[in-house]
Image (tube, rainbow, N blue to C red; front, side, top):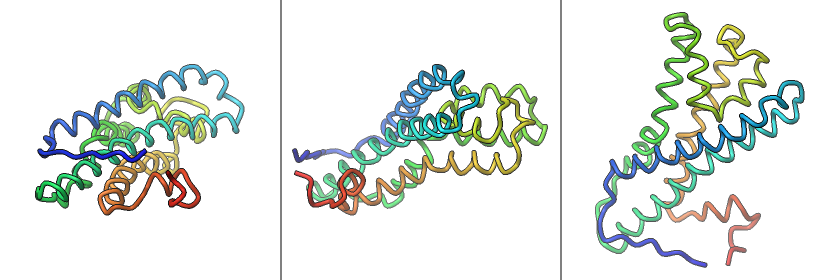
Length: 193
């Protein structure tokens, strides 16, 4: 089924950002549900920790993929069919705007690790970036900032930066008419009907 997303007007950037943050909220809630039910089981089983980490990543990054995919299709069609001007910074703006809460929380987490902010902030960080909790349980068994090493902090940073990478790459590839869904879900992108 081929979808045509054609828009006669440009989508308001603030509305687009609000959608992105909405996807973040939706993903955070789903990850909270998964993590809160699996937190007891994740204590000693490494494979379960890895499985839950992959599940929460698939949820959060999949929602961002979906948002960037349809935004890029909408923009490409608006430029192609309605001669609207292309905003070449749109993928970057989207990659900065949607996961803004994760960026703020990561900066505050570093301040907490350095001792500038009280260590109780770590609980708030885990609540607001619940999808990273399974990765943290891979680095340490405790849920206190002092138990997270600097290499663990680097790992948390890399996982957090997957969000803008997915948004930027998805938008850029889809806008340039690369069949991203076909590449991701099918071995040969041409097999899609």
